[in-house]
Length: 360
Image (cartoon, rainbow, N blue to C red):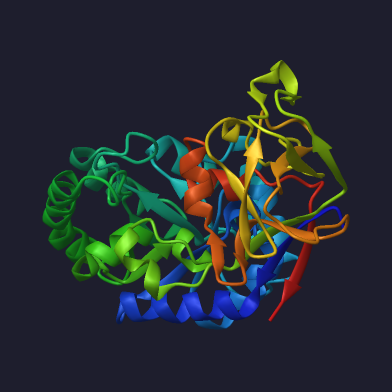
């Protein structure tokens, strides 16, 4: 294989147990949108299924794909649906996110009697959700429709980065909770994402809505030791050559060899999802357990790396872009930071040109 991803099911199982421990008595809503955060939707869902209560995806298309293999667990759509999608959502029994009375009325007209919905309240994300001062009026009207509430939630925009703001948001939502519990005592509440589950476990409520942590990457650095990254990204060396001092490498010749160097070519580039923003950013890969710097600009299909210090290197040798090799490791967090992005983006950016291998 030229470039491939390896996903470790044993690591996924380990992370699910770690999340269950953090959640305490709360159930798990496993977020598997965006192709299971780039890990493979149906494959990771099969691993998580026995230990979770609900699956969450972004869109109707993802829900249909998941239902092909997951026949029993509820599937919740986290994003707003188009009205033209409502009949299909209702027909499959998926759970749409509803933020307004208008949405609820339209969905009720398209769905079966007692169809489930998820009601969202906006306490600071500014994306979906009813405003808190309007939530009870909307819920009162929804109860008059032929719909049933599956769950009620809010979303934490800054749980991993702004503790003071998150505490304020949680306090405001807590003020709503006493009324919500009286209004709909049987309806599950979910508030916490991965970072929230780590830092604010006392607010777990009935469900925690976890994504990144299930895949082994912690949005809060001090919790990384509890998790095992499930994804490794690799490529095979396709060409090796010796370049003299002062030779340009890649487009624009932004890098020139400071000395005679041995350079290897790897068949992976931004068309595979390896970020172009890694160009000139101290990125590296692992070959024979040693870090080999990426030289010059990342191109569409290939990157060049310095292998001057690697003895016995040959075409076909394995290079690790993300993951472990020997005692060395390049984490998704490191790669994402060098590319001025986040691990979520890195995982979701891996394209269909990359082969997936599952183990464990």
